[in-house]
Image 1 (cartoon, rainbow, N blue to C red):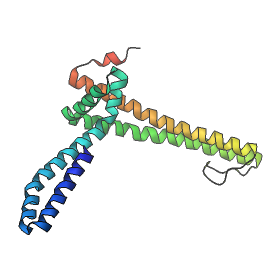
Image 2 (tube, rainbow, N blue to C red):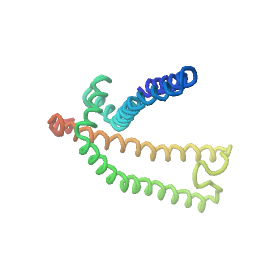
Image 3 (cartoon, one colour):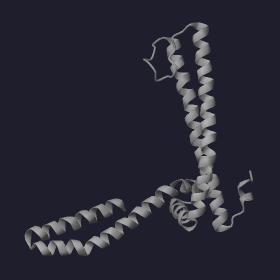
Image 4 (cartoon, helix red, strand yellow):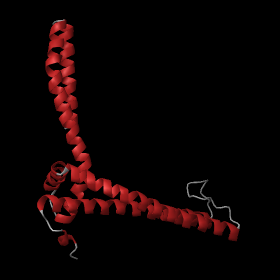
Length: 193
C-alpha cells in the first residue's frame, strides 16, 4: 500500500515536472494542482490504514492463537476491533499501560536488586574482579569468566522473556475484552482449560 502510493506520488510529480519543462509552465502547475488534493486524500487514507495496521497487529496474533483463524480473518478482525470500538481500544490500552509500568518496574527492579546483591556477595567472598553487568568489560577466557557471562546473559534473558510474555498476556486480555464488547462472546469461554 505504502509503496504503491509512493510510486503514484512519484509518477504524478514526474509527470508534472515533465509537463512543466517540455510543454508549458502553466500546464504542469495545473496538472499538479488537480492531483494535489487527490494525492493528499489518498496519502491520508494510507496513513490511517498503516496506523490501524500497526495498532491492531498484536490483536491479529491473538485472533490466530485463540480462535484458530487464518491470516485473512485475523487481519480483518484485528482492524475491525480497532476501528469499531476505538475508544474502548484506547481505554483498554491506557489501563494496560497504567498496570504494566509499575508491574514491570517492580519486577525489573527486583531482578536488578537480586543481581546486584549476588554480584556484591561474590565479589566480597571470593575477591574476584567480576564486572557488574555482562556487557561491562572484556570476556574472560577462563572457566569462571565464561560461566559468569553465560549465567549473566541467561539471567538478563529471563528479564526480557518476562517482559515479552507480560506484553503478550496484556494484549490477549485486551483482545478478549474487545471480542466480548463487539461480538458478545462471554469472557467465561476464555477461562475454560
